[in-house]
Length: 349
Length: 258
Image (cartoon, rainbow over all chains, first blue to last red; front, side, top):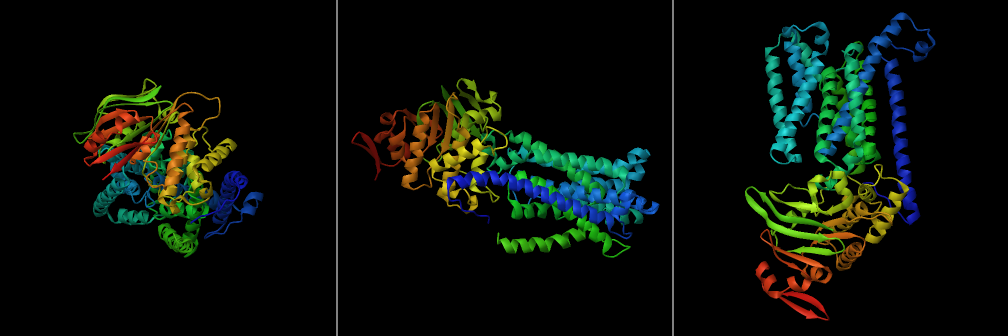
């Protein structure tokens, strides 16, 4: 529990004012960490690169190609997927006022996965022109994620309200349905499809290239910025939906916006990287434990920390068993879970 | 100037919870709603707050239908305090209070901080400001929520216009001295172009402080008017279905149960 005692009135105003400054400081600090982690991830790997050599032009052609065509898109993708999952997790936890809400838990990731898997198995049969075929999987994933959130929204609205329990229970049902769908696709797929499907399900950034990363990256970046802008409103929502309305918030509109935008971010991320669990649930909790629960720090803080964590996890997955790679989903859980346990033990929440 | 409900009917699952209620929360007056459990007091309050769509009838603020107000504009003229306390995450009391500040979007202006501190002092929560809300007792939480409702209605001297404050049993967990404190604050507010409506359980408290009392039973207003007209032994005994006697002593009414 965070606790402070305030003595005199004067110290109160200082405390309040100091807090905004502290929040900015935390974000700047996280941005520095992200920069450092990013640079480390860009230079390490099966082929070590020197950032200095790349800048002063003494790098060889092969090194430049590895940097610009393989490593840079991969680091950018992993950072943005981590940021998206963590920010979406933070926002969904706030929206449903439930510390357990997470894109995976309420079925959004499964919806995206179902969309993507259907394209892995049936994409070639559709005989799409090349320029669409590249984007067919991300598009199908986004449609899947939005389909699920739209369904969640209408289903809960139809029954008059939008309670936490309803959403979580419907999420369980959706996850079950999606796994039926995914199972069916697995059954229908041939050997090669099954292999790529299984690896995709474990989560990996190995397929990152600029053509697919750029559009997904723009969707994720814009989504995160939109979510950050909702922080004051999400803070007030924590008092309760009726209370938020009393404070002047158009709650329906806020919910619709937040659900659509977080679905877009998760869908775009899942399409390129597969299902990477844990990040959306744990990163927001880490930020709450370390820096406070206000969404003004929670959303940007989660995005930055999520990016750091995902880039490091991907780095570990690349360098542990060179030249082979671990699925990054395994790494995120292995890295994050003990850390989270330690934090819980320390804070005795 | 008043916040009014005219022939209001609210039904849920085919049952009329509010059944043709007329109520006027007038600026400058402290109105109270009393009545037994399940009489529809809280539902009426939500109706007046603009939370629900009535099946029939209309709610108006200064003669403008409430649905013509955007949520943001509504928040500028009426503040609400409910009984519910379902905050999940570990906010500090000062963070809860600053959420009530709707005058500028960032909520950390020097004026906001100064106001929050002043109102916290008035509501007796200034010692709690740095504490985690979740660790407070029921009564402390109630005082914080009360203070937040006041932060929302704060305005500088010289700014005019009517405003309304609706409270659902704001003193249910408070000890006697805070209970009186809250009602005195409400009474003071009415002198500053504010109409206050409080749902109260304590009949003595209601009869002591109210300018207007609405006695509800089974979704209707059974009796309304000034204290003397409503706080009567026969009416109360009838509505509460238990013997209640009322005595006048030193010009004040005292309510007894047997």
